[in-house]
Amino acid sequence: MTRVVIVTGGSQNIGLAIARGFQAEGARVIIADLNPPNDSSFSFHKTNVADEDSVQSLYAMVEKDFGRLDVLVNNAGICIETPITDMSVDDWDKVMTVNVRSVFLMTKYAFPLMTNGVSQNPAIVNISSIEGQGANPNHSVYGASKGAVASFTHNTALEYGPHGIRCNAIAPGWINTPFNEAFLDQYPDRAKVDAEIKALHPVGRLGLPEDIANTAVYLASEKAGFITGQEIVVAGGRMTKLPTPSL
Image 1 (cartoon, one colour):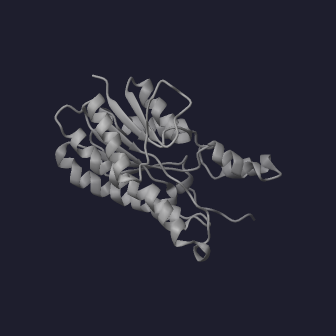
Image 2: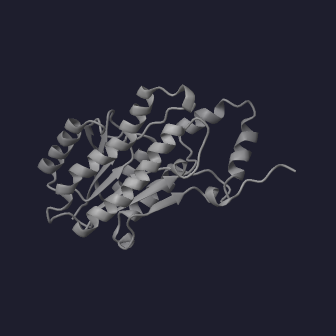
Image 3: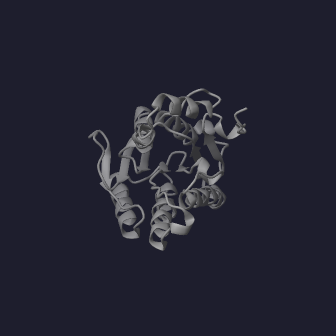
């Protein structure tokens, strides 16, 4: 039986790579996003994943069209770069709403469709970040939100486990997306910047969206059947390398 998968924020970047990864495994993928992907092979449902009514509308469609949900990937997220002293309450709330409330709402309303007796090896994969474990300048609210996602993952695994649902998180490191490319392009000596960033990673390269997609597909598969409540760091070894001064 074809598995039914929802990927939030799946219209671009890491989310689209995850959607394609599951599609390559034969799954029927529903992308829940505000904007459609440039790929008509996916089912698309315009969804504000931070809005309860919009989330319920999405799940009503999934129940009507598919009758079950096998995999949920909570990928949608935003980042606002601001020092703590300059952070507005509105900006703080916006990031927390998109990055944390969405995971809560999507997880809450997934439960009935994952426990109706027809789902196959139901699993939830949340996308957290290494910034929930360490800090980058001006990313206080983003880091706090991703730390919350990791904590919520543990609680979901605990509460949903007795119902046969596994839940894990992936903490990506530096992933080579158009957003990061634009960030690097602002530096005049791009080759030097690339070399310095690659040097942070023992594997000798930056991450690709497909690296996260491959991990998500694995965590949702039967091969990961004894893994739940974990946050898997996919960062090319970056978190294992202690910084050293230039001597």
